[in-house]
Length: 575
Image 1 (cartoon, one colour):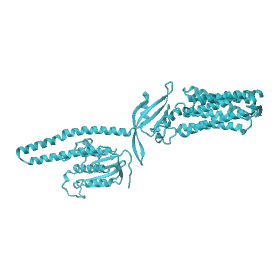
Image 2: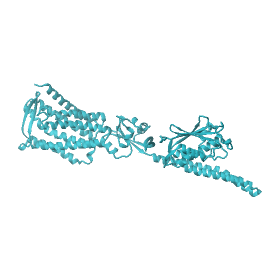
Image 3: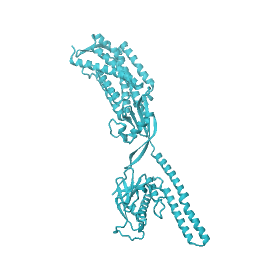
Image 4: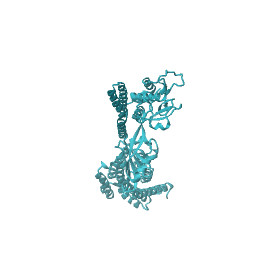
């Protein structure tokens, strides 16, 4: 009579049968890919083995129960072989494992089954009988050398399979690592159950629980199918693409999830579970891919982010290339996103554009601003020749000096626009005071309200402060040139250097710059001072930009001019 334990055993066999055949059907419905095909065959063999084992348990006679042992002898080796074929394709090792190995492994199964059925010289078994357990029949045999030799072969095949899975687990990452762990674990249960049977460690010495654990394999690998969807974007393709690339690479499935990424991309994902493109720490990446992939593969979109290097953050620009992964029906199953670092290329392009604009500006200055002093010199020299009045030569000399100043400023402007590669830590307060000492201050005073240090070229940063101080003195107190220094006087111009949340500022308490003229103060030749060349602030802007910074003119707290220099990312600070 069937007991409760017997009912449970029968139910587990039915679950294994239904689960195996169900996932076989599901896999065959998926895209035509070797992984799905081999998994489907594995599930068919598992389901068949579980079905034969069920027939053994419920056989109406002992002879019929024993009869089903022979077809099991064929299906069991095939199941192990097809498991091996599935692992080879799944891990991407089919490139270096010859097809002949798989063909020989498959061919040996029917040969073994034939020898088992014929049992010449009792090489397969010496006797077969049936035991009873929980109201079920348990057919068993006293095995001969053929069975034990086959066990060594099959365990060897399984050992290689698990070695391939382990190697793949170590070298892969993210969702595929979880997926591989699931596949490894549920299949290991089957092997453990089989070893326990042949070692006599089952709940009953004649009870083989191997088919029962096909349910765990069907459900476990099924979870990998449904949950991680490895048949949409296979580990084989992802592994080959990702591991050998230095550029950040993301593999995105059809649902927008980042299912895999390489080491270069890992810092943008962090510890996010089940990440999507929105979780990737690169601004506008998701929008760029969404806009670009509407028409298929694309490249050319650029995104900029910050990477930590040497204790600070530096801007990095990536060119985005997204390639859809489609099946044979043209259905998009996922997208491979590759980010190529184009920071240096973009910097060179920007430098070239700046140089071209600078050349155009220089051409205008040489053709216009230098032409007038030259005409003055020619006219004054001619008047001196005609009249003999040498005072005209003094006027000509002033024009020549004016041209020399303009040429010096032009040469300096050309040099200061060059990108700065070598930077050192510069104490801002010391740099300001050194620059102040080199400027004719006309009685103004300096207030330094910062102790930060910045990474900069010391000489060119000092030039920034000299020009800003000179601009403040010339435009903030032009009528004080002959005034004695009187720090207690309300009329004394004060120039303040302080720090902001992302940089520093230079401000004065002079009359300031009218709003209508603020946008043009950095243009070449713009000045309201009689002796100015109009290059001072243009040089400041070039040096600031060469450092990778930005500068803007605003109004100070006292109504004067305030120049704010901001860096795109934090600089080291010191006491």
